[in-house]
Image (tube, rainbow, N blue to C red):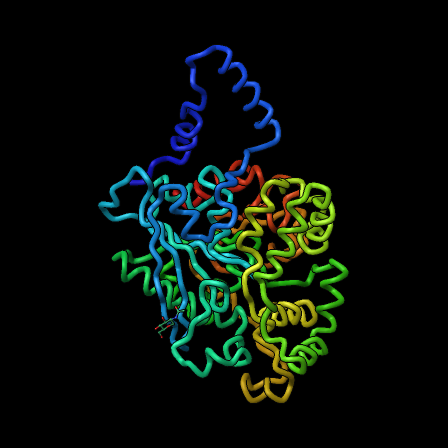
Length: 417
Ligand SMILES: *[C@@H]1O[C@H](CO)[C@@H](O)[C@H](O)[C@H]1NC(C)=O
């Protein structure tokens, strides 16, 4: 039984926060909490340094790890929050799968804490919540073939195409088998949308297993990409690909080290603007919704591992236009696809109900490109440009007001399907 989301929100608001025993103490606390609320929702710093499982357990929710093997041998680790805190887990629940973006992980859906992160909000209203980890990220770096496992060139020989073609179908089969449900709700952010679109168009039989796909910042078309850095990189993607191969740069080098560097830099107040400016290059201007205190939480798990080919495949979309299969060069394309250029993904084959959410200040997935996705898929049930001028690419996950700006709408739409 799904509780109304508004009921949960109002219950959360009613939870007693102040002890009334001494008037003085109350007044002091009230003043303090007013000061805090003026600065936005405070983040729960007790999650700093914890991974996805530890964060979930830190807040008293149940958490399971699931190991899912794909048809091509990758062993993925997905997390599951089978039921909410005040729920014994009995009875059939609707199932939702949350899929993160590039360079990220399942941590995205819990690291802003129980009042703000989508996994908890959905768990609290009765969903069985599954958190994906795409192949190659910190949780999904295992393979059934020891030879592939030992060879970065072989292991990281995939793009988001394979995440959509192999990972998602394997995960959906596993989840439906474990829960006895005949379909699930899908929520993706960025690459989590790209891989969904790959699955829906290349394995159309999976559309029937999707009750609703909520796509937040649906990355695919990059034709309106104008961020000068990404545009330049995209236009030279073939040369970059050759260099990466030559120097055996098959995966992002040591994300743990990058995390530590960024953590050291960005959690110091004096450097905050530097970090925001750096993010603005790709994410969107201003970062008005990003709170300084959240950097430590974000950088506890991001960036996560990713393969170079994932970036190259996106760069090809900037260079070639459209939303196309991987470009291996004319000779190999001819062999693989029967044409010198890669074919386009046929998005009209995506017949599952789709709700699309996109931001006006998103510099990775421009609103115009998101609208092309909306026009291309077959069954759009909610076409929602977030009504906030400064909403950018990371705000889907980290905005201080993400619940009001987006999740209320997203969850209401889910509950209607
Ligand atoms: C990787 O998968 C194998 C099964 O193929 C398993 O025995 C092993 O424990 C896994 N390694 C890790 C680090 O999880």
